[in-house]
Image (cartoon, helix red, strand yellow):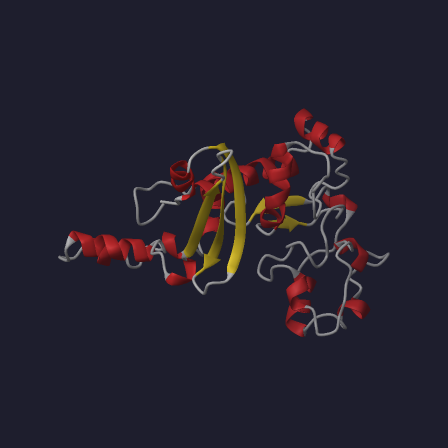
Amino acid sequence: MKGGLSLRKFVPNNISYLMKLAYQIVTKLNELWVRMLHCNYKMVEACPHSISRNACSSVWHLLAKVWEQFRQRLYWSLGNDKFVSFIKDVWIPRLGPLFDHLLPNIEVSLHMKVADFVDASGCWKWLELNNMFSTEVKEYIAACHPPNDAFGEDVCFWQATDNGKFTDKSAYNSIVKNDSLHNLNGWKEIWGNFLPPRIKHFLWLVKHRKILTNCKRIEINTDGAANTNGSWSAVRGVLRDSAGNWIEGFQRFIGRGSAVNVEFVGDPS
């Protein structure tokens, strides 16, 4: 969107639309179409760690590819804790996943819920937590209420907006925010100077990483042959990188033809 004509890039834009669908599947659990998807793909949890299936539609296959990216952009408000993973999901927004804050040599199953660290009296299991996290992290945990059935269902929110609600724009920006092509720095300097147009265009190509450097060059060598008796002919070739290393070879039978025809078919230009 930045540094050009305010047009979105296709791939991040498509991913943002898939995330919108994913958000609806996670949050609109009472909708008939969502319930049908949960039943059809046997989704026991509202937001499982993976939705990959061997037999699924093309849209579901694409959705499964971006599911992990989508989950990383959610955070949870704890209720009765039927869905929230203790160390994988974000339920303390300032910390992110607790997996990143575990002390060395500590292992916790990804399938353990937050409720698994609450005792029968409804308090945190500090005997276990003391061995897992630093004092600072434990202070954040202590500031959170333990899961309780009285709080109702867990509620998920979208991290990229202030109100926690999903928007296409916030999803797109969260995907491309680390992409240097969408950083304003450098674009005004390229077009707002008095350099010749061809120099500006060259710098624009450099900024877009479109300059074909030697490391990206591929050499194609082809040859052909024709039988003088039956006029049967074929072509073959090889692809090599800039260092001369073999990448891939090919060959093709082209039927009857003269040596001239073979040269035309085998000429990569």
